[in-house]
Length: 596
Figure 1 (cartoon, rainbow, N blue to C red):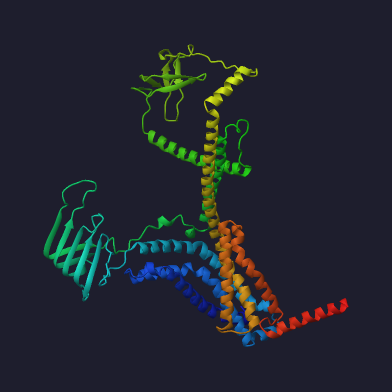
Figure 2: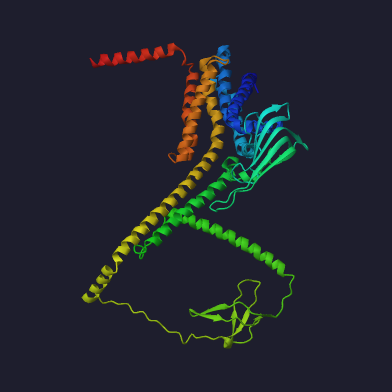
């Protein structure tokens, strides 16, 4: 590596690390504020908070990297231009693109690392983050009883204390006991003073009450006239209540498998599997819609069918073939297991089975039902007057049944012959049919039945449409999660193309102008990203275009700034725009003179 590359890269790494830490801290603060009420004030240990903060830092890093690259590259080339180092580099015959090469190579490596992090590290961290956040949300707040306020942190109890003495002392205590699940304040405890303190490694809390009364009233039965309900009042000098805090105030960790269906915790290969599954569901709903519509209109579908499109039919055939292949494979595995179990059993030539199940034999479309009798299971064919049942599986043996024992009535069955009429209806027959239709209300019944079928079809189609719309929305979200793993990595390179030439044009370093311009471009990038993703979620635009929308909009700006930086354009100086205005005025004067 040449000295120039070391100089430029060394001047870039320091601001990059600093800005990345600052940006990550800002995004971490914004992200933590959303869960402030849910995670704080629950008496969690310091290491639980550090674990959650560590997960948040890793999960928001893909968003912090583009802004850090933009700000650090702008500051680096702004400092080089402000101290005339960039001018010296150009005067020595080195082009701007050659000066951008060391940082460009570093940003490309950084983008590739960001892609690997998005695909492998961030999904695992998101899984742990969701699990820990859920556990923290489910945890009850820390035991903090305040004077004059009802405390309902302990399930089944509502406690009010008018005064607190020291760390554990209480005065003027009122307790409503709802631990039995009954509604109403039927169990009340009053005490002059008390003491609440934890014991047994803070797994239990003991509430000692002094000089008070317990009031208990039975719940009346509604709708039944009876004598007044029972009411008890017990006075006590000392009463102790023990609360189990293991399930109330302890943090119970949920198994991470509970979040296995969330797309944020999947890598690209897992997202592709999810896309295939959702695509199968959508195609199945579309195929069933054609079948149900065909069954509702039997008159119009007598000679034709509602055939789905070739794409839907091909996908249905593919899904069915894959499903059948899986079923056959599972069946082969089960057959092999059963065969291995039966290898140890000794085969016998004949086995008598008492009271077997009835079997149905089909011969020339006539069914013969065999009554429950004792039959002989044989492996050999002995004579022509016996009927052998074909085994249904490899493990079954042939069943020999004597035909003489069967009571068949095939010859006595009546044959029904249908003759189609070709002659037209007579006038008398038509009048009779019309009278039947009018007098018995067949026409009204047919109309009402048609209306009912139409309403049912409409409701069925509306339900199908909502289901398909939900599946398609989820399908697009999976696509967005897939493409985001590439777009967030490419955003680092796009921000470098904007920041480095802008710094060379501005020629000012520090935290003034570079920070202002970086924030403006990052806000524009964030707004374009949100807009594109919203278009993709709603189906207005293709998910591929929606996720790449922000990069496609900012990439021309980067190429424009690179071109202007190579020409040493002064985009941020008034003289540059005055010269453009003068050239426009001169062109209008020339055009006016030619017109005259």
